[in-house]
Length: 335
Image (cartoon, rainbow, N blue to C red; front, side, top):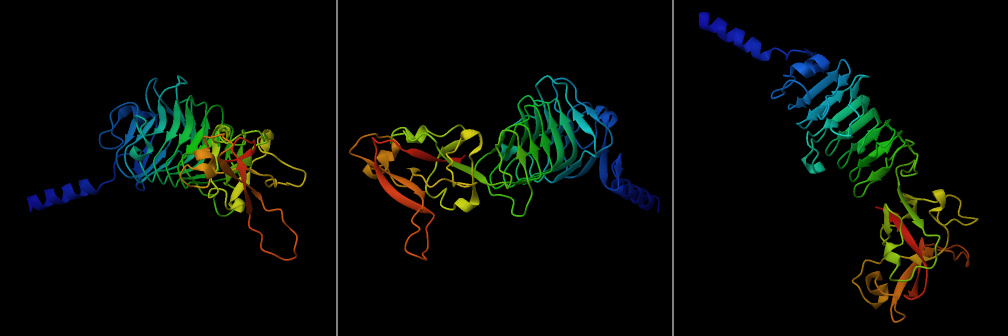
């Protein structure tokens, strides 16, 4: 009987919630961060290491030590609610506020992490998470290198960044109702959020409807050898496939970047520009747009402008050939 009692007590101890856990949510504050033991392997002091999947919640501000990271998310499937509190860095330009301990490629970062309802301020990198992340209602302030770097298929909702807190997200990510005062960019391809959600980027780097930008250069003097390098940073010379459906894109004419005519409205002008066609280098594409010889030709396209002949189906793009030593505009699309 004595052994049975001991076994029952042991089972109850094993089933007991972790110290600091309320309703299955582990609570974190400055005292618990300095004491350590928040999860298995979490040493006293910073960073706080979350080595186990589960739910966590701040109950106070965290003041991160100089030269340290704030919260090291070392497991997939972590839900972290900052609960209105902040992770405050020392403003020395080092450390990651929340994410992988030593920043590494996104594929090595924790996946399926949800982070919401708080502020990260004064860190080298605010947030660094892997694929399928959710970042919601977060403020990213005074970052030395980046505000947030997230992997593919991530979702950003109602966040704001300030100062130099640039935001970068992976392929096929979605975002809505954000205000980014610093540069916003995609790592790879992406799709827009399907239902509403406005966004604002002070540098014009994100579309209000989360679409990919494209534009036609105002300069019309690029020959076939110059076309591939005509687009501004963050854009590249478009292939016809990339701009085949203009309605899925957003024409960028802010700050005089893209050509706009009197009847362009918010869309692209009906003017021609060089475009790639996806073929091997040969005389029909300026030798892969490396040639400005009059013996070679390349393809230019413009929005179809033939409205004669009554009712007809109008393809978006009307192609033509141009000799590679002649100048033309260039169609550019966001990286």
